[in-house]
Image (cartoon, rainbow, N blue to C red; front, side, top):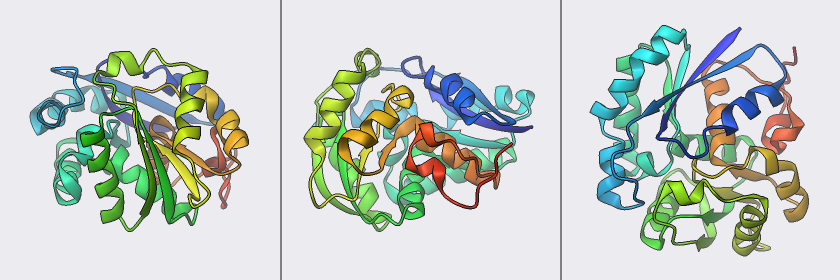
Length: 243
């Protein structure tokens, strides 16, 4: 059994994780511990507070007790708002607190894109424009070229969590363009696990979503590969380990 740990802020799209665990169809366990979201607002000040070391530290005991082998801070906006260097400091603090390999969803997007050989990406974000721009800057710092950006201007994670398949597909299509090799949907409050096959079929290219890449990143940290085509192109990369 490989046990992956996730620190997830509040309660919005976290039911993606048991769905993904089921779709993995192997000896993988996803342990999710909820952290205090503080003010539910896609504002830079609120997001920086949400991703503070003190708030993350409060969730680490639960993951250690669960026997997690890796930890991912499953919050894109609560990591990229610190910038590339600040997000690295955040991950290093998590590794020290947990005594285990650590990462965050922001880094997961960069690592996943590089895994797929993707350099040119489109961003389909639920966030306001100011916050979306910071994510685009983060991707550029990771060596990716952002060729298109779409912002939905939603302020709260609670509202994002109410979106269904139609809204998710509409957002992805609005951001997509001929120059983009992949489309990225960065919000972990957005339910996407059930829609990945539809999204990739509709856009005819890889689609990377926040909860999807968070789980993939946890597996990467644990040096595991699982073939799960229902979770998108990212989960069909060789070498395959299938139980």
